Length: 447
Image (tube, rainbow, N blue to C red; front, side, top):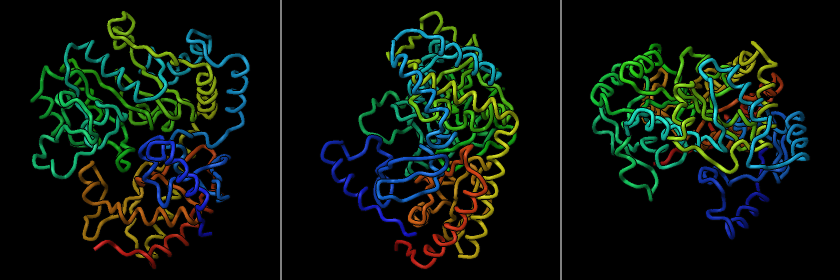
């Protein structure tokens, strides 16, 4: 296939004249060989402006759980657009969507809607501080909680800060952040319950909450070790902290009750994004009645002109009904397809001498590529990932895959939609055969 991207190059060059950096989200500039411009999508496939047809595992950074342009979703949005686009007031749809969420997720009794998960995280942090009277929040290295000043603190600490493994640094990757913000975060290593206990004990009485991705999907794809979720719950109950499950990516991808149902734990607050709106700008802060009390009283302000926008509500209602209608078949179907794809990629990699070790539950997984001399075994936390994964080599393989018509996320994550079938898996593996062979013949590691 060897796709080319000449028109995307032209458009990107044109965009740089009027759009800062040529893109509207910094991460999009990382795509090689150029940020790609798309024309249309259908189910699990997309077509770009150069006419290349691609099997998509990026899926709008995981938002398109239902595939591209599902007819029912488009109809729902269109029907609402004819009635009204925005009121900055109430409509029955918001109750209908809230009722669906509370019926699907056992821990959720009340919701508040936002336009993106970053906003919901900001609201959650304000809420837990108002509730507990404490200012510090514990988070884990490698977990992503939006791009705000607080959400990115301690996300991807550089190796230069790794001197003290017991106390990961609380630094921010962006300039322009108020330094005092970082002082209010305690950063822990993921998947080490005893380390977590020691850190919480050290800050006893200071922490308002513990926030986490239940399965880390922003740094590799790392599931929680046995006992971790119960340890977080125990510590929160013991010390009067609130447990925040950031399900921006995992929400509804892991089933109707989200990752908390899949792994069996009960948080106080839940962040929902991406799949809740099927690609529309929609998110939610959800929680128990007790946890949401300060929002109800107005002591913790939560606002937004476009919150509960009717177009997004119409989309969300359709998305949630789609999950409900699938019953127990979801996520079993995507898990099975994903595991088949992981096994197939591993087999092709072995034939080409490529040390790929796909990792994850199948419905989402990461294509870990071991560096020369790196130890075998699962990646368990951010530092393990940063040390053992060969990001440069993955970048070359991803380019080869893209040129053969397979698109995964730049950082190595693959997501499956409910529209992927065995046909897509067959086609993907056939294209991967060519891409991996090209990589094996062409790749030259940097000296």
